[in-house]
Image (cartoon, rainbow, N blue to C red; front, side, top):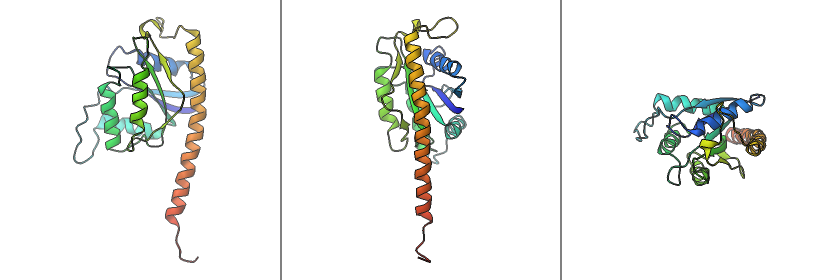
Length: 202
């Protein structure tokens, strides 16, 4: 059983991205334990001189560090991600940098036809920045357009084809997490051996 966190990439109280993560959490209970994390109480990034994160940021950073993988669900605001998500990522990159080498899956829901495709592309670019450097699952775009009509009263996706697509993406992510974590652990082990190497006695 994998332990994931799902980040709601907006401060909106009525976001369909929250509904999407809640559905993912419920639909895959037999495959992963998913904790949904909010960022709406995280203050705007202000680049503190001591590089100390606010308590809300540190709590999120600790959960990212402990998780096997991260799912970020973002809406699309003006062809990009919401300011609150960008600010949160700036906090993480400027302080403890918990996303480095962390397996990440990106999803998104949007009221319009394109379903957050441009914001997802932008988020991929941001997560590839040197201080974030997340391991982003390739060829894995999952998005929902016209998201206000996509869920029933119980918060379930109503389009069976979309559910099947999500199941395929989620199964791919579990495999991606396993491969990524094995690779990262091997590289860390190799780095430690290199750092501990000594010419004495050779």
